[in-house]
Image (cartoon, rainbow, N blue to C red; front, side, top):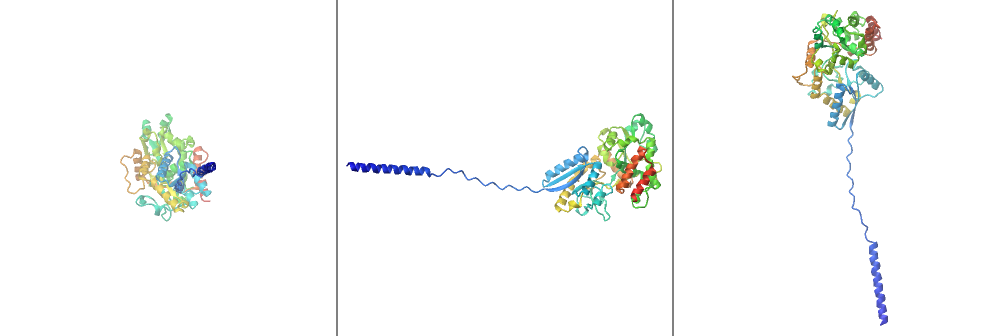
Length: 447
């Protein structure tokens, strides 16, 4: 019996141990807790490559050209996120110097502010970078009848901001002139008659940015040579060899600068006056008259002066010929154009054309018209607003009424033109005579 209990006890112990081992085995081999499967990250969209349009823009951060450029580019890039207008913005002579430097260094922009004449177009022509826009201009957008041919075969090298660009405007502060007891001059002698009264008040008679050589040529001498010669095309004919710069008409034109100085109409201190100071002098009623181009009209910030300014051609000059009486010098308006480098890539070319059309939109063109930056638009079926500022209406009237003559630096470039501009400054400084400068220009041009 005892044996039986012993066997039963042993059997019970074996079963208990077996149960423990099996239980322990289950604990050791229980499946580990697993993390939920992570979702594969969605494939990110690849950024679209931008079309970069390398651009040379004209203006600075403080003038209307520059301020408007920055605003327009910002709006365009937001509306066209795949286009990047990568620009360098410069102004006045710094711009021209950089154009020459970039072209010489092979850093050719795709789009640039340019013209078709000797001053604004020659560097691009010499570099072989002029591109004919004619077949790419939307004839439903632009009125091609208002865009003059720029090349010998009718090419259009840039899209002008407007029609002809008058460079020889005489601005008169009517309020100031009347306060001295005078009216708008009909002759140069009428201006000379104002000198004593102006000096007594500490006023300049005529202000010109004489520190800028180009102003003497573009804004003064271009008008004078046409008047003295009686030939509206005298400059282009001289460049073509029909006249010489030592001809009496040209010498007399240079001599007129010395006459103005002697008469007290201009002063030697004008050689220290730059573009901004010239505008400031006139805007602040420190001068009866200002010599500049039509484009400066919208920059006269003093509303009292702007609203009482008369834009006029030079009055009758001593020795002028009847054939060119009342004439003004005018050139093809500058604008933005694509270079051959820019046109080489169709995507860049089309992006540049799209930007130009945006830049020349009706609202922007109307604003330029209101600001006095252009004479008239080149847009198709453009309707001129009835409420244009007084100065703008005067400008349109002057363009319609006055004969247009050659602008000197539209045809004469390089060393001869530089010598002429510097030479006129020398005449004012008393360092050279009219004959000296005429001979130097002729010598350099015939080299």
